[in-house]
Amino acid sequence: MNLKNVWRLIRGNNLIFIALTMYLFKYVVISERLLINGVFYSENADQTAGLLFLFIVLGTVFIAAAGYVINDVNDVATDKINKPEKVIVGSIITKKSATQVYHFLNITGLVISGIAFFLLGKITLITIPLLASMMLYLYAVKHKCNGLLGNLFIAFSTALVIVLVWLFEYYRLIIGGAHYQLNDSGFQTILAGYILFSFVLTLLREWAKDRQDLAGDLKSGCRHFMAKRSEKTSSIILFSGTLLFVIFVLTWQYFLFKNLDGHALFISGFFSLVIVAFIYALPLALKAKTKADFGRLSSLYKLLMFAGIIAMALIIIN
Image (cartoon, rainbow, N blue to C red; front, side, top):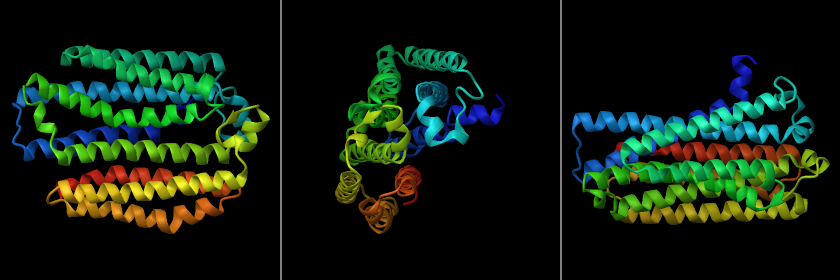
């Protein structure tokens, strides 16, 4: 196991994206709203919170990495058909060793998160990473090939990343007696929008990936949600889901424009996502037939999510 294979096993690029999402949401979106509302912390308080937040990010990243590993452990047969050149578990590392890596990553992530929440004074928040860990495990060992539930587990786990950042800052404000500062309509609109944004795009991408990997899934006996649908029905589902996503983003932009003053660049940034979805995603979803078509659709959904997260940086440009 060289560094390159370890990076592939734990999906290092995805982990960087998770950490980037958490830091942007805290230090751009939330910090900007607190600045507008006149909330300031002492330098010591900020340094302490920064260290605790780093622990939470690391804990989240470790748990996500564990989820990727256990998924590979339980997906060896399918991966050997769908992507034989990329198989690591059972080829470069044994299933037993990979399982041990999973336990190490998962336990380490939960311990790091628990320490952070204990020091924050809200140990009960450990239920969030614990819930994510349980869903990732259940998805990999039981529900990936069991209808729609597995896809919902992954989408919900992704949305929890945003929820976790919000809860961290919210309880930090409660301790300081200023939690009402994150109750304004502008922030609530951003929060609800990003939670739904992450959930919907993740669900669409999971469906596209499942359809892309259909051949291997069927041969290994995996009967997930998309495996039970015909090619035409799958395309209609993805087209309808993409159309609903476009409608959701447009509706979200209306409420952002209504409740968020002075952020025209941030708001307009999302209209570019709508244009991309209209021009590329909708036609591709409607006409998708081959493995390559669904692969391109999956990549496009991932690109839309990445662009939407990076768009957070536009908030600070007034």
